[in-house]
Length: 273
Image (cartoon, rainbow, N blue to C red; front, top):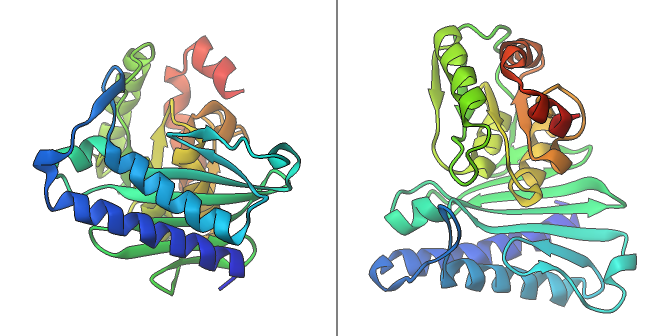
């Protein structure tokens, strides 16, 4: 395992321990609302702090982009070739309800290119990892995207709009089309895990829009390293910036994009471009 990936795994497991302890007594967890249907708790913050401590101990000069604390502000961070991208608890709403589908997501960019990725499911103790050029793994077992070659028969993951409802109508149109053209749609509530599941072949594809970079980064690298394709709603390489994501096996990817295209509004196209 790459040394930087080893540190990321250590950090993810440390955060997982924080989350698992809190999960034993959810009644005392007091969430606050950052925005409409967008919650954060002291568990998110404590998990993020645990991750940052581990990363800073190993790499004090590296830059950090984290969901709760934002960008790093230490001297020299803006000049670092390395940047860690952290979501300490992807699926906070699930966690707060005791619904066991949430994860820790950590990615590392080197000179703006994704280099390492970890997604850790503390409930199942499942560890998804990827290093650029070295493949993707689940619990030390090499993983690949599924072998499906056409949209018919695929199981597709998604995320419903829940914070910002501007694009809910085109989303529902997409949902209707894909419900009719696939074996089924799944919305479990953690985009990071959904992307890891595409990499592992549990899902054949995934689409969602309005995500943040920390939701996507680690999973995007895993899908690439597992032999899949990922892009924005028009199949372009803008998903990390736009937050609009389509991912699938190589042959399903163009079919999935084609199914979504008729429902793209000008606003979604310009955002995805």
